[in-house]
Length: 86
Image (cartoon, rainbow, N blue to C red; front, side):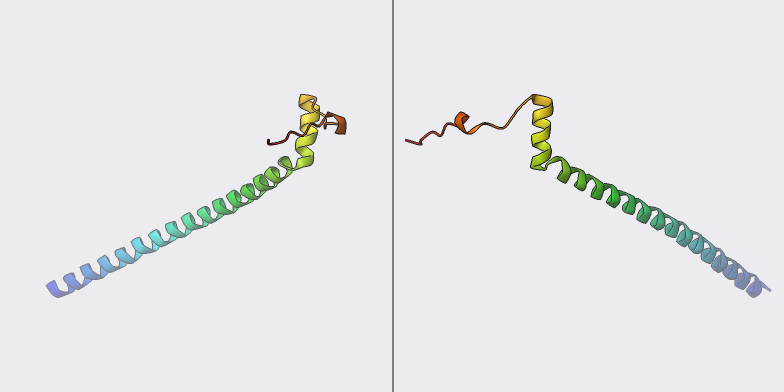
């Protein structure tokens, strides 16, 4: 009788262990899925920001902003003075 009790106890421990592992696997799977989604969102945001950097750093955009915000205009040829290094 004691043998059956020990066997039943071991079997219950095994089933409990399997249930705990299965629960942990499911939790880990959900966490991995969440992190993959987060990575995709951050990669899309990064791509958007890279495009913004390219757009804002373009010479045409910088020239337009300099003219609109600072009142700067390109120098006329007679306004350019070249200095010698002597």
